[in-house]
Image 1 (cartoon, rainbow, N blue to C red):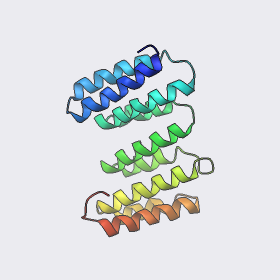
Image 2: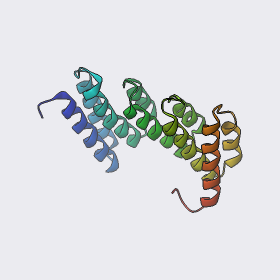
Image 3: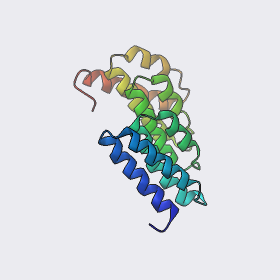
Image 4: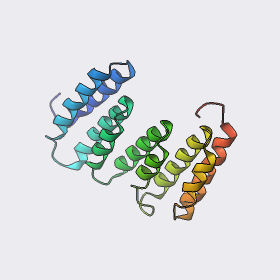
Amino acid sequence: IPNADERARTFGVIAQSRAQLGDSNGAAATIHTALRLVDQIKGSEPRDPALTEIVEAQISTGDIKGALKSAAAMDRSFLQFGVHSQIAEAQARTGDYAGAVQTAQKSHPREEGLWRASTFQLIARIQAQQGHAHEAEEWAVGLGFQSDVAWAFLGIAEGLLTQGKGNR
């Protein structure tokens, strides 16, 4: 593969596959190779899609700290907003609700309002499904932007309606 960005993206996809197959050591090594390739990429336009694949691979291996670091290396773009949402979802699914909310708050409410609000909805839904609706209400009321609060409460309602029926 001729370009570093294409190679890095490919290694990111391979790492995701290795993680799904249970080869966590192989996935980590492949992620490491992809990150070295990213260092060779000039400009955010080719770099951010490669970092997106890497973040997704890091999430699939449970490396949330690494995923946050890779996301921080991205320029503020719609791709970064998307990976923040994916990271927040992974954090919520593992019970790190405070971390998930903190990750979602990395998106600016006026620039990325829908991404941000829908991420709060997702976190609140997962938290309520896992039996922690009251705790979700506590952070939701403090979000500051009414649209964020409304979407979070919608997520709490969805979570209560689907509680015990699996993650939908």
